[in-house]
Image (cartoon, rainbow, N blue to C red):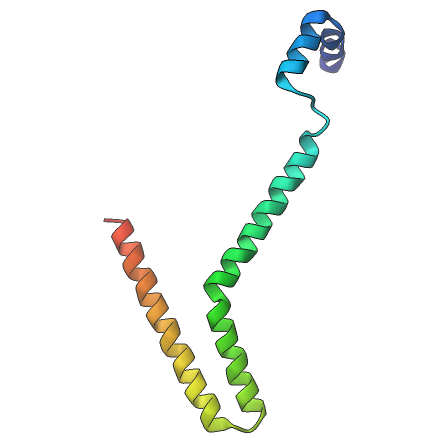
Length: 100
């Protein structure tokens, strides 16, 4: 019922002018997919930016542990954990400054 009224309205001169003014509905679905894809890409960029150093550090620890360089792996692990703690305290300070 509602779609027939809309189609009837689109056939009139006023309806055609309104459709020209507001734009067509055909591309709306594609735009929704584009918006979702952009949001997913932005989330991936943010995740890599936030966790990139940590992931690289953990792979470094794993590579040194697998190559029997256990003292190097321990050193790399300690450095990675220290960096994580520094980043966490910096994030906490930023959070506290934003919520004052």
